Length: 287
Image (cartoon, rainbow, N blue to C red; front, side):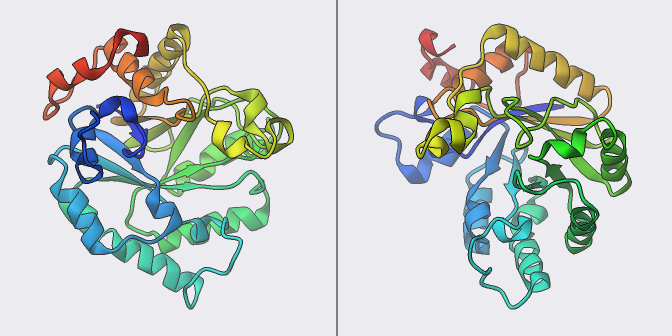
């Protein structure tokens, strides 16, 4: 199956009316798309009560991609509020019990920062992370180009396969070592993740976008040719993996939901449990 969704559900204004309450946004979102990437878990380990609320607001066939806590991928500026690394990973893992028990966990996404390059030390970090998250489906996304350089690419793919890491195949600007190329290769037979960040090369790095770069980094509107290209990539990957998850992250300008809807239409995708009439909320201009 090919699942299509967005990063988060709160910031996609095109999906909601002015009367939609914040507490109703997830259930409304779930009438459009069968999956979502949860970003709040990157900033804090979420309590069981929050997860249970999200389970109650989504249909049985809905799936969550859970972004790993920032401390787990070395992206906190301060010390994580846990006694040890092991305790931190265990707390995160235990927090997922409601989504695991519901059968709605698609995967945990460990997105590593641009400075996480291909070294023996960082390979060992990945091995340790795999041990901490034993029993969970885990996707790995790199942001440093070294993992896919010619002399490392095959070894990277082999390593991900051997450790049953789901490959995160990305579309992003080619803006130096802090970006990765498109590598449409699956590393597990069960699942592959596609994340579409847009192609805003000028806004990708602080050096070229300025102090406001975090707000404009994902400012991009995919055209039909580019969407069709990713439909083709997804079909290629679907021949290698049973389930493909396609996540649109290009929402600095609010384009993600419209692009995802266009993708679904052009790929002729429909899902049980969604309300087709909701799609009429999209205007022709958003296609």
